[in-house]
Image (cartoon, rainbow, N blue to C red; front, side, top):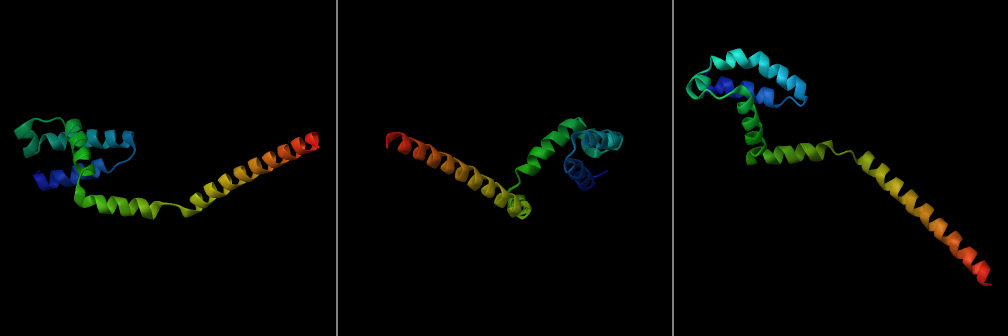
Length: 110
């Protein structure tokens, strides 16, 4: 297994979000990894390679724009509107309560 093939497999493993699925995939790949030229040369454990690779891939500036765009694309404006509606409702109820309290004080004074 050359570095290009190894890179493809490590990227695939790093892309797994579920931690336990990631561990399963790492253990399934471990025997093949230990036969790679990279492992034979550096003797670096697969878990360490995956951990370092995830950090390396996260810090890649060329992918940063894509990550930001994906985040923006996944924003739900319906959820944002729901939150704003709830905030408005809470402030409206508080304003009504304050108004009612002021009316009671006005009645007590008068």
